[in-house]
Amino acid sequence: MLASVKESIPTRREAEVALAEARNQARRVRGTDQQFRPVLIIVAAAYLAAGVVLGLSPRGGLPYQGTALLVILLGGLAVGLVLLWRIRAYSRWGLARFSLSIAACSIWNAAVIGVSTISGWESADQPGFHVTVSFAVAALPLVVAAWLIGKTRA
Amino acid sequence: MHPRHELAELLGHPVRFSIVALLAGASQAEFGFVRDQVEISDSTLSKQVSALEQAGYVKVRKGFVGKRARTWLSLTAEGRRTFERHLAALRSIADRDGVGTSTPSR
Figure 1 (cartoon, chains in turn blue, yellow):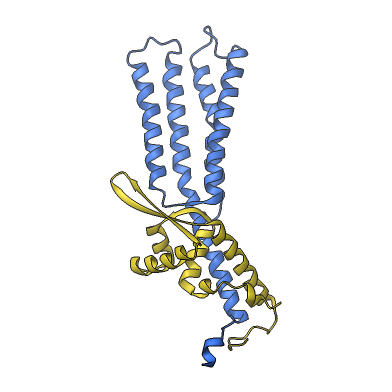
Figure 2: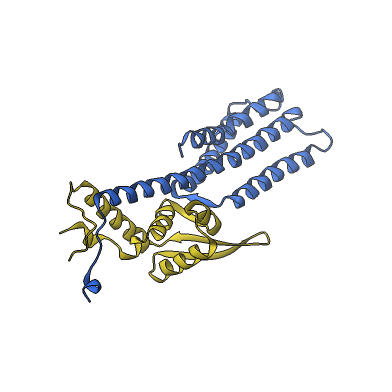
């Protein structure tokens, strides 16, 4: 009879153990953020590879150059998507950080292309490696984001 | 007011507490991931998730990755608020020197 009106209050020790468990579980979820790294690195690598292919002949003319670009970019995108699909948990900040990295890269990319074109760095009379350098600079936010995510302690 | 009043009864169960603590830091987590991290069986997780879902703390979403069926779990806004209140109460209890007891009271 009395048992029906009883309630158990955690002791101080039990509360501390529960808080430690909460911290432990939060750390485990944060650890999953590391899985965004290979996605960012693969997209950056595909972008850089596309820059190298374009840099070999900026005005076209190489056989299969277009096909190679398509394979590199679509391949990179496909591998990135497969890796994203394989992630089993998304931390709240990890997903936001990943999305921000992609958005930052897009904006940075547009800025790099704009500056490269306006300044004449990528004009017709410039050597091909200028294109490759522009692509490498454009991919920097992805590399930095991957590095920052790697620094996050689980 | 004693912090015990802020404790959520449903989260007094250690397994349910661990599940919610894991989901609190996640946008969403796959069923198998939660099972592995909390170190419980499929059936135990299923049972506890049902209880949490009925209470409105957890949202269950079923989807497919390729041909594989996947179940995703996430905390609802209510679940998140309840967990935060529960954690705050636990912190208060942990901070109260020697006040907490395991003896029943009311």
